Length: 321
Image (cartoon, rainbow, N blue to C red; front, side, top):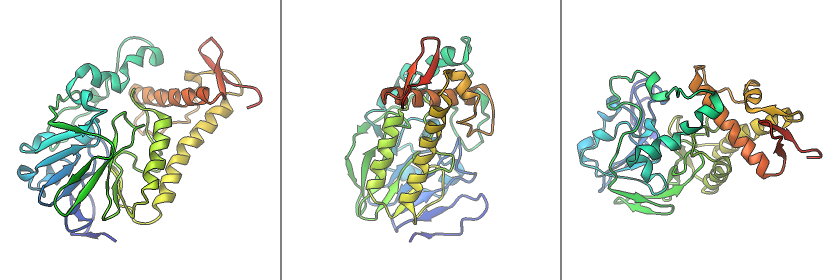
């Protein structure tokens, strides 16, 4: 069992001590965009995993003494506080490296090249322009041009002193999405595979639903005893069941889409069924994300031989499936 260093009440920022060295950094506000949870490893090598907890939360961390900043992936709510860690060596997964340093790659991975196809017209409603950032978020959404000092790959191990942490490539949410596993303590930081009751998110251009499903199983196979993720509370019971319930939400979406395609329908017609409707804020960008997630399901169903394109921008279930 983990022990909190002080009560986690209201919306106050806290450090939650999972072990003597491994501490969860919670945002002062809720851990939702533009915020996310971070992990602080207070060992011989002082490390931080992700940088989206906000300046108020990082007041409890010796930011100038952080030696190593490991970024799980390139999304803004995980990277926006990188400027706090001025003395840290910054690393990210090799599959995401270009997205930190090449604006064209960054924009392509967000998928906006498909805007005209899915939304009509050429005007892209960019997510980052719709948000007023809180005062303790030091950068603005969009391309950051973070100069990495190195990259890591699946299976790489960081020995930080007493603490050992392993990089686990877990793509699907992004091409270079990583989790981090502490094998001695059986602690898993699953990043954005966060067992949210809303289910997995795969609405960007470099998401891949098959990869995401495989990644969920890969993390389950680690059999962690404590699960920490980017946007939820610490879980120390029923972890396998939580992952399975999370995965089932995506599979249930797919089953509903397949059922709807007993008759031919377009992506717009599928989207109108609100099969994917996890956003409280209904704007064109969230409609775009929902359609991008539908595209992922159509791609997967087509590869399984369960649906076919009719040639008029419609899809239909194959007879006998």
